[in-house]
Image (cartoon, rainbow, N blue to C red; front, top):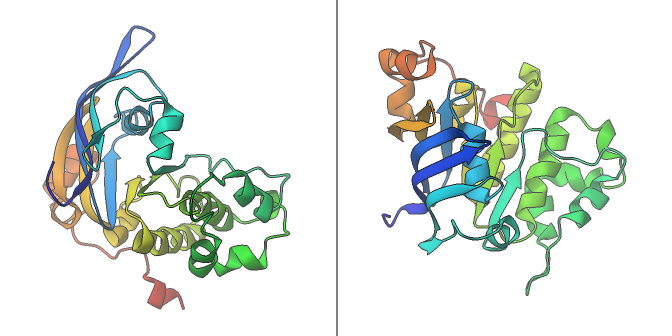
Length: 248
């Protein structure tokens, strides 16, 4: 584990119902910025995230800032400082924005960091009495990410945050993640390579439950042949998702 690595996963294996899903995943998540976890459908990305969190039976090594977590239950892993924004966002539609955030509070010496959440996402303050089910997809993602920032987490895991969203909303969600990553490092599971190009400094690619590649995201996405081989797409240099400045 290098000085620049916050989360180090080694030889992570997952067996579910007698079927091997992960066959030895290695993954390094940087202490700053966004690290992207990539791969084709069925490569094992979500299972890797669930393995890191202890949501599925796992073996191997998962170290957060040097501390081994692989034997810990999920609630203990979360208390060490990992926040999770799941693929479906997990927003309670019939509750207000404020109530959704309140449910995520954990006991702590400094209390929940509402100041940080509202500084990054002032719209959540303005909409605190609005039912979460009436929010746009991008606004719901603000709630999902905001919940992970309340408790002084050291790492945010965001699983497919732009899946199924319209292009305009994808840009909105990318802005949400960009702002969040200024405060807390992010492990981003994502299929939209324009979003990855815009946000990620580092990346890892899974194939058939194994790590097929790790390195700078720009190097992978700038190499059309390697991107095609690993991801099934030809992505040389191209226009990334619009920057925050371009949207304003």
